[in-house]
Image (cartoon, rainbow, N blue to C red; front, side):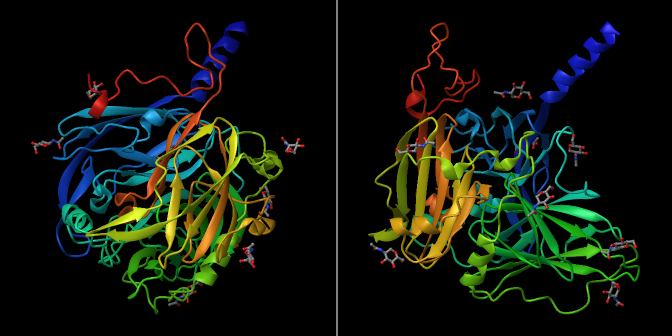
Length: 499
Ligand SMILES: *[C@@H]1O[C@H](CO)[C@@H](O)[C@H](O)[C@H]1NC(C)=O
Ligand SMILES: *[C@@H]1O[C@H](CO)[C@@H](O)[C@H](O)[C@H]1NC(C)=O
Ligand SMILES: *[C@@H]1O[C@H](CO)[C@@H](O)[C@H](O)[C@H]1NC(C)=O
Ligand SMILES: *[C@@H]1O[C@H](CO)[C@@H](O)[C@H](O)[C@H]1NC(C)=O
Ligand SMILES: *[C@@H]1O[C@H](CO)[C@@H](O)[C@H](O)[C@H]1NC(C)=O
Ligand SMILES: *[C@@H]1O[C@H](CO)[C@@H](O)[C@H](O)[C@H]1NC(C)=O
Ligand SMILES: *[C@@H]1O[C@H](CO)[C@@H](O)[C@H](O)[C@H]1NC(C)=O
Ligand SMILES: *[C@@H]1O[C@H](CO)[C@@H](O)[C@H](O)[C@H]1NC(C)=O
């Protein structure tokens, strides 16, 4: 009896945070998703790259071999690396993996669940691919707030240029923006190439991410409703949508129940561009048993292309379900963010100007913003331009408390949702509008706050938030328990650091 107990408890400890290992080679290959061959970035010969399938608290090891001719960094979009910006894979905090070299990212997906994706952060590599899906599954002791789906499907949608990523970069370097993309891919494939099999009556969890460079997309499935359940690591109140706007860098989980049909009809999955002229269409196919041939009937047009009001209204309808548990046993609503006093407000107004020849984004008088651990910060993104913006914060999720057209001022705080705002890591800011977020800076390190629009990011629309702790030093190690993790032994060195 005694022995039995020991064996069981050891197994449980190991089951809590097992290590999982990935070995990835990043190399060039040629693909022609839209019929025009282009050099793409593959991982282990796959485009998109392999699924990073993890469970809450897993310690993830990803050994990346760079077989490109350019330096490379991978970032884990939306995953919260606890006190470990050493693994964040962005230029300001990490040295690149040089050609012919390899480096192992090691991070724990602590206290989180959800749908995310990874992508290369340097040199506009994302325009050549190199991205893939991340799932952080819940531990078995914490039930899902819905019936266990028949299957999870990862769906990566994004705009695509037939032009080589170096040419796109050269275009940005001489001050020309990126033109309208050549099309929209679904899982790296062109029109009607990505297919998904549905079993009659079964329910699927679609984990959808917009992995593109700059285009907001509307996602829908012909004649099927989608029940929204999760967004970047938080469970939502479960509402049905016939289409969802997914902006660059955002991830959503939806449940889709297959029809009980036996007549062999197939259906289109559609990812169409928002706010572009002309409208671009990404098409996939949902097949049922016995279905052959392409879907019948017209492709549903989706919402009016330039209807920003509709889009913002939908965004404001996405709320957190306060009573369900996510990664921890306590419900998501236990943290009453609405009762916390704000430590500081940062108003970020993006702008762009021509300084002679080059288009450079300005407002960046500030490059690094200092904050103290547990500061509760209020950030307002004000967009005075005619293009939609998307913002992402590494290392943290934030509450999206308000979004409105016009210019923000303090009186607008009266409309904030201080009860059940969604918590996520990427948020859109509509043209001539603002979005406000509240965030507890409780993760030591230096974290990238950036435009998810790859064009704006490349042109400098980012800053770093340095989160420091006060005191609490342990004299024996000189490391504060709440401080950032020590620099890893295998850290790559570059620039001034090289000694
Ligand atoms: C992902 O991991 C979970 C938990 O270990 C497992 O049940 C599932 O089968 C895995 N899925 C894939 C596609 O590997
Ligand atoms: C890496 O690149 C070299 C040179 O292009 C090639 O010979 C080799 O097969 C590549 N290895 C892998 C694993 O892709
Ligand atoms: C490079 O890869 C080798 C073999 O896969 C591995 O043993 C080594 O630890 C890796 N190096 C780094 C810095 O991750
Ligand atoms: C929140 O989740 C609970 C538990 O799954 C569910 O019973 C309830 O209906 C959900 N509330 C909403 C508004 O979706
Ligand atoms: C399919 O049939 C089952 C059993 O008759 C029923 O419970 C379910 O609601 C049906 N599903 C749909 C999507 O019509
Ligand atoms: C096949 O069955 C589905 C579900 O009952 C129905 O909506 C659809 O119209 C049918 N298609 C044809 C071609 O009869
Ligand atoms: C917030 O600030 C008010 C006024 O300074 C203070 O009375 C209150 O205790 C503070 N609340 C919290 C939760 O710290
Ligand atoms: C604050 O914004 C509101 C709504 O745009 C506007 O009506 C009001 O005049 C503004 N207040 C100030 C002081 O600018």
